[in-house]
Amino acid sequence: MVRPRHPNKDLESVLRAAEVRQWRVERRRKYYKMYCPCPEKHFKTVKLTPSGANYLKDLLGQLRRATCWEERNL
Image (cartoon, rainbow, N blue to C red):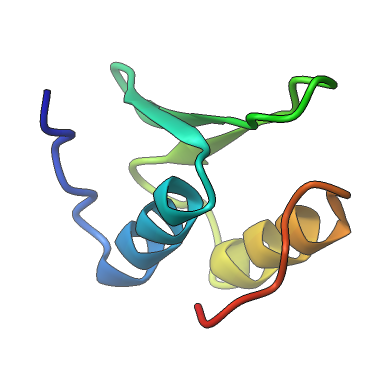
């Protein structure tokens, strides 16, 4: 099943990067939920309407701190 695109192109690129890293991305009513493939089962939510100007920067920082998120070309 094809996942619907995020309306924000920068956040869509984060979701695609997660899919490349084998994270499972699911669309919910007001957000997307990304599930980590590691045994610890990390997850992260991505809002459809980000609340602030630093939302993308904060999201990327949180993902980089996750031990299972390898830094690649984002």
